[in-house]
Image (cartoon, rainbow, N blue to C red; front, side, top):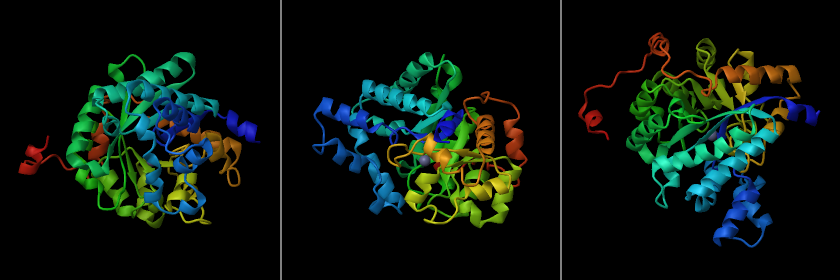
Length: 357
Ligand SMILES: [Zn+2]
């Protein structure tokens, strides 16, 4: 059965670059730069993968992202880690991959935002040249803790590197990530407006560490096409109906959700409630290294309640919701937003808005 699951053509819509660098790649680069914080690969694994006794909190999960940053401040290293991530995904049957990351946290060593983005394209393109049956694109993340002004700068930079401006891979979407508490989606409305007008696909990490009201905001105020995690939506029937009605896909990351405490241990994963309500979903890894998982493993977790055919159908549907296949600047998008009960408020003439960078 495991072999068969591995062979399914998969669509990966929610995978973070920083949390998915193969352990040996990080270890090798650290050795090359003389940076190893511990003497053995085994000990390094403990630092990069969430351990059993650390599970249950989003903050201890996010703590695993520090070490890779030591080596991913250099163009060639970013190229290399990206290439290794894509190759690993391909080996697990991924044929459409949207890789996401925050370029801002790769500029500490002097890279510009543009260089930090192009290094990822370069790594992806090496794999695209090798695998002609692979489609891939980049989702740019703005970190919540960097604040709404930086989010606008990142959104503009994302437009400058949009897929239609590049021969191969390019930026296809915009996302908001980082600790939800204290950083509600509505603060990032202007950044999403920039990304939306520029034709990027919009996704938002919401309802992972906060209640359904954050998902409502992501939909109504940011115009999200997809929701990352969205676990708390199961507590709100009206919201489930809305997600189904507007065909808003939820990017489900099973292993990660139990590890961060977004879903209680022993409780059924919300993906089953989403499917029952007719909400489109994607099966995603979130972070293959931090979560010690891969696409084969995530799909295998569904086998107790779903058939292989049903899992295959989920991936086919997810492809329809991918940003990689979305035509930029398509005309009907504004109509869809306007048709929603609470349309995105237009940018007002408030002083704070004009003063934004
Ligand atoms: Zn995520």
